[in-house]
Image (cartoon, rainbow, N blue to C red; front, side, top):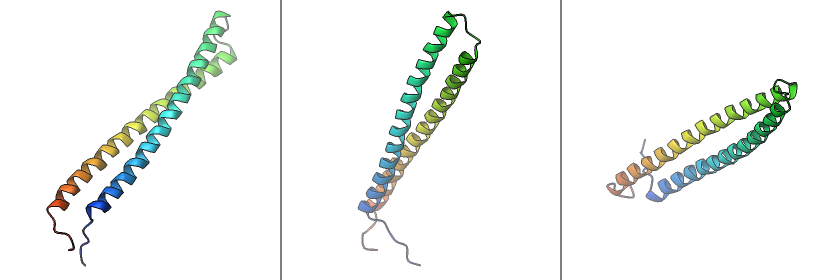
Length: 110
């Protein structure tokens, strides 16, 4: 079976597509994290109000505490996914640079 060599343009297109996809996912995760942080801050403020009213262990306070904890877990998961995508993007770029070096030494048309 003949081995197909990818041209530099094909490699560049593939890397660009993968990088753009990862960057879009990173941006979406960052936006979700920002929204979760804002919502968590609002809930923490309400918890402080309840504490000032002497309702620290009320049902509302406990519900707010649970939602703040849930938001925190989601934020940590988003951060993990962002780190993974960032790492993947770096690997794709590294693989592209390696492939580009290989292509420069390979005659075209084979």
